[in-house]
Length: 99
Image 1 (cartoon, rainbow, N blue to C red):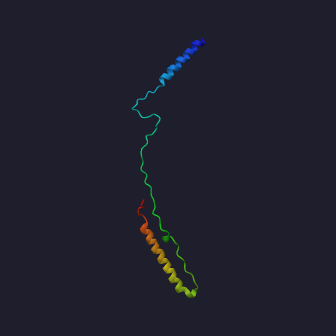
Image 2 (image 1 turned 135 degrees about the vertical axis):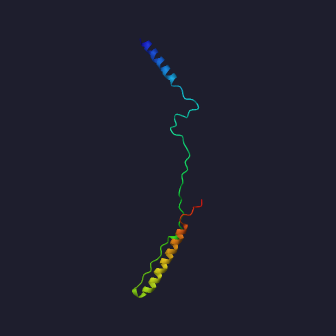
Image 3 (image 1 turned 180 degrees about the vertical axis):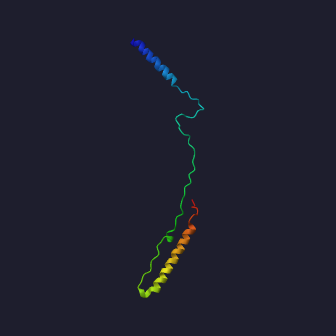
């Protein structure tokens, strides 16, 4: 009996292994690949650097009450310089970056 059992097991293994041969056609896609890779274009935004001269802080003028008009004139000048810098930054904003 053990000889017959071994023979049956060996025959079953041979049949199972012969059925496991490559059965897909050569024209079929590789079964190991789940998704076919496709190129994707990714748009990357690069921001224009703002020059450091436009980001420098303006000094705030201070002084005693007796120099009120002088201090006010200095503060107005600083405010006008700051507004000029903001206009330059606004002109740069949205321009393309050169590679």
